[in-house]
Structure formats: structure tokens, C-alpha cells
Image 1 (cartoon, rainbow, N blue to C red):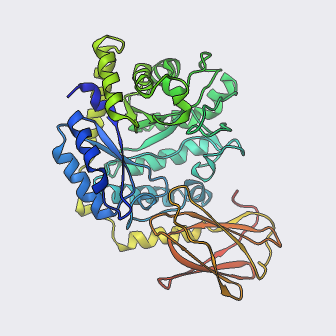
Image 2: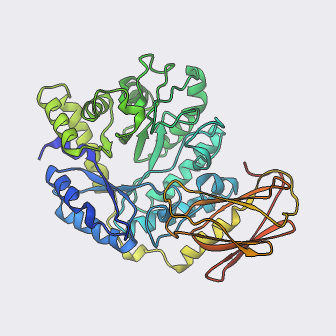
Length: 444
């Protein structure tokens, strides 16, 4: 087992039944290599709990087990609580609600053995054409986003779960998807320092445990045009030395197009990322080849042994810091009910004047996590029924084509919608009713 293998965090995807039988051979190979953790995609709560316990027991080092849970643990795991996106919670201007959302996410994750959440997003919502940010962002005001991100991080880490601020030094101005191509952020140096970097300064001061790099180029900060993930100028000089961040630095997914175009192959990209300042590499597609590339780079001194030891120590520090599963802090039914109430509270007019909805509404389900949302079904009159996977937690947008009024809400399950005057009523299959009153001049 090479020390460099500990710097790799491969992805594990659940089977359609929520279990992980199909991924077991790959996980066994990863453990044999001595990886430093896993990133989980999907799975039922109990299956995840059993899997993480097994992985920790079989690993020769404490593992970081992460997942993207920006919208609560239910975004990834069946049976867990899904929450509205960060933009919706931030719209409430209720700091306690934001903290409670972070606590609930962390507690549910911890009971499953997931000790690392890839959030919150600290990118500013500055570019309407941004294809990936949207409702994931906390807003466009640097100081306010910094305050909200700090509150989320402190609440999450108080539960023993590692938080991850992303995507340094900010993806808010991107007009391309970094998973497909390399965005080039054209803002000047002063603008980036005064705005985009401000939330990251705030979370660094609040001791955020980890930070994720952006697969984007910033010519004003690094004239070489490298993506931040591969830029020593951005990661070592700016982040480590100027901003004095000493936490765990993780690359975004190594298979993403934004970094793939800047290196001849995945192994070389990993070597360059570690050399630039990343401590761990997320989701390499070819784990064995990437591990070999890192090992060879260390043996030939292309990778500085001191830099590798620094990364190894940081990963170990936070894997040991993360709290083990604890049923004593398991969320209770009231927590899940509060999550549903929070989803109800964020219903609001996104744009358009306040007006009565007509006899027909357009319903759009926006969900990049699952493709199993069923089309709306007419029930008769002004009522429409929606069904979707409870674990998917999509954002649902309701629009009145006559008035242009747009409302949005998010909650997994099975619901029907009825329009009545200035309100939209959601009737869920479990009998719960919620009414979202449309308000003028608030929201996006």
C-alpha cells in the first residue's frame, strides 16, 4: 500500500435497489490499494449504514466518507430528509432555520457513517447564464453569503461532520459547465478579491475543515490559464500563503471536463493537482492507473515527498476528527416533520405579478439527481397530481401561463396541486396539506 493511495477518494454508486452489491468488487480493490475514503452516490439509509461500518472495519486507515448533501441527506439517500436548496432557505432570511437545516443534514449523515458533506456552496450568484449554480447559491452579496456559509459550517461541524466550502476561488461568474469544459473567469484581480473571494475569507476565519477547488481558469490570478485545481499560484500562493488556509483541500471530480482538457490523462492531472496544493483527489475514473501515476511521481521526485506527507497528514487529521456514528443523536420524527415544514415555508413568487392562477398550470420538475420523476397527471378541475421518487427531492416549478406567476417548492413524495386565488395548495399522499402564499417582490 502506497501512501499516495490515501490521497484518492473513489466514487461508489448504489444499485437500483438502494444496495451496493454491484460496487463490491471495485470497493474491495480500492481498499486493497489503501484509499483514503469514498464518495457515495445514492443508497437506502440502512444499506449505507451497513456499508460504511464495513468499509471502516476493513480499511487500514480511518476513512473519510463523503456525499453531496446540499439539499439535505435525502438528496442522496433513501429514507433520509430532503431539504430545499440553499437559495430557498437563504430567501427566508432566517439564520436559525439555516443552522437547523445544517444540523439535521449532519445528524442524518453521521448516523449513516457519512462523515463528510460537500457543502455549502460559497460561490456568488452573479451570472444569470451560469449553467450549474442557480438555486445552489446562498445569494449574490459577498458579506451576506459569507455570514450564511459560516453559520451553516459551524452548525454542521458541531455535529462532528466535516463541512466543505466550494468552489475556490468562486464559480459564480462561469458561463460554462466545468464538468464539460473549462470556464474562463474574465473578471479582473481587484474585482475577484473584493467580491468572489470574500465568502471564502469568512469561512477560513471560521475554521472550515475542507475546501473544494474549482475546475475553472482565472487569468487575472494565474496568467498561465490553468484551472484552479492544477494551479500552484492559486492553491499554494493565494489560498495557503495569502489567505492562510490550513484545512483539507479536495479537488472537484477528476473526471470532469474542466480539468481533463488541461492534462494528457487522469493520472497526470492527479499528479499536477497534488503538486499544486490539493490534498485529496475526488472520484478518479480509473483508480488503479491514477494510483500508479501518483506512486511513480513520488518515486521519481516529480512529487515532493514533503508535499505528499503534508497531504497525508491533513487527510488523516480530519478523518480522525470526524465523529463516529452515534445513535444517541439520531434525528427523530419531529426533525423530519420540520424539514417538510421548511419546504413549505420557502414557497414564494419567483417572478411575475400576484394574480389568481387560471384553470391550468404548467408544472416542471427540475432534477439532476434522478431521472424517474413521472409526468404530471390531470385529476380533473384545477388539480394536478405529481409523483416522484421520495429520495430524489427535485425542485418543482409551478407556472401560470396566463399571468406568468411562477412558484417553486421542493419535497419528495406524491403530491397534488390545486390553485385557489393567491394561494397554491399542495396535498400530499400522506394527508399533509401545505399552503404557499405568493408574496410580491421577494425571491428570485
